[in-house]
Length: 389
Image (cartoon, rainbow, N blue to C red):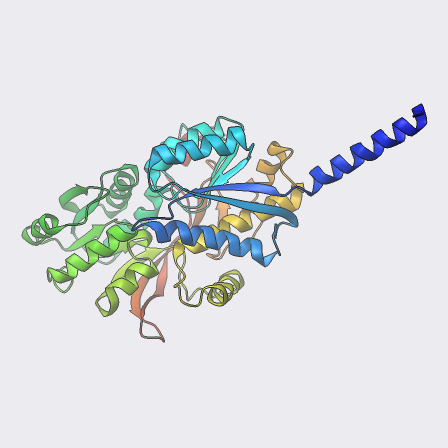
């Protein structure tokens, strides 16, 4: 072969290789909880994100993407092994999906310290929001404390003077109680930390009854919340002592499980099905078409917003070869969130609005939420000031 022909063949081979790489989709590694009583939380986040991908025909921001999903089975060791495989073996640079804060604690440091980006669609422990914030760590849901601070604000505005508070004994539970107490300001007549795998709350019900609080605040997500509320109702407490709840204790699946007894509950949230904005209506229509037998939860909207956030960055960068450029683009939050106002604070956690909601009977007779009023606007978190990004 002459030098000219060899050079031509080499150029063609190189061109074919480059074209192939240019067409490789951006992989998004999702580590989430898909099994057990909390499995629907991860399923909804997964399907919400996939819905955003499907809306663009398999792309986000015009870039081909592939969602690679693994079940952590709500076990930190499992999640860490998956993360190591994603980041070190598969060279995945975008990771998301974690539901529980104890799992985030086991996974996030390794991901962000390995020159990969973690974008949380749910868990957002206080430990990563302040001094230990990281340029490779973003949150599209909330910061754990601020989520429950909204409930503290609501309970105070509703005139309650004392409260009984309960949450599971892990980081998110501790953040929940801290956040509620921070903004409630009233007397706490009882404070209990339950077990993360607890199913029987009879002892807690007895303590609540004995304390006779003005209001109960409890944070129990997924199957824990279903069990707690059912037992609260069966104990006759639902009719005696009101509750003010936050989103994870009052998602659509939990409300449906409680049925008519859920009517009248007060809850706080960053999103409700009656929101009158185009992004929310578009997602609701797409969800109903794709999953007509499944209620739309907050978790699904957070997965969807995570997809929109990634799309907003990919639209500007065209890929993730330059991670610094991708992060700069992501920080702009140049997308229309289903919840309305949305931006990233100093610590790359959301700045958003929080609302007081009533649980009412929907058109189909099933419990749903109705917006009462906006509690706070453009609300961030107390830890952002300690982040030096």
